[in-house]
Image (tube, rainbow, N blue to C red; front, side, top):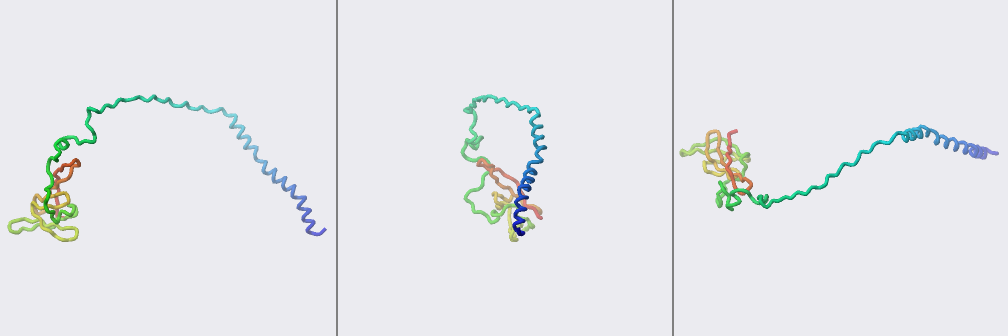
Length: 175
């Protein structure tokens, strides 16, 4: 016998013994698992909570014939058809300072000329403009009411959401 034949014979004899060893190793170690399963099966069963009681549906008669509709305005504005209170002047030419929000304008001083006191207002681009009481300023139909050395008083017309306007006082002060 040469060396190759001896190795083949050795492998044939050892292979079944090695396979038996591997298979017995896979089978061992299951005793603890089987014991745990048997222990769990011996425990008493838990209590299942009963299903909640279902309340029967109660009908409700909802009569709204005597109530006002939520889609119709309530109050005098709905009845008259015309808005009440102050309103913006229609068909007038817009002034230059009406394109700027009031909070972007700054008062930089006053100027007295020909016994008139002008307010000096600076826009965001750095240009300074003169205003007198009665001039319109800001985006909410604001009208200059008075000019003092430290503040320009403005009265704006703000929409109230139902077709009318209300007056709101605002001011531009010196920074």
